[in-house]
Image 1: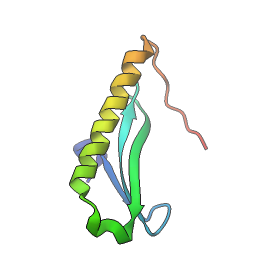
Image 2: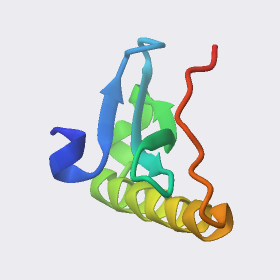
Image 3: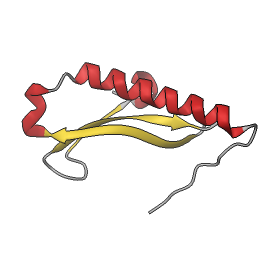
Image 4: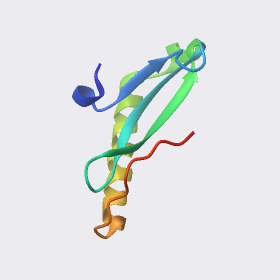
Length: 84
């Protein structure tokens, strides 16, 4: 599912083969993506995971963090930058 359509991304084995995760974008006051928030778990635990609930939770977290970033920016737009 595309992030733009669903509001989150699912990953599976992208960094570590045994890990799966879900993440959602964090936006600045200019509606640019400046980061993400997510969770990850071992694929062996997938049967114990309610993925729909996790997706909903990371989307809510992304929205909340974005709202707080906008509220605290006081008109200043934090620019996206690559780190690493």
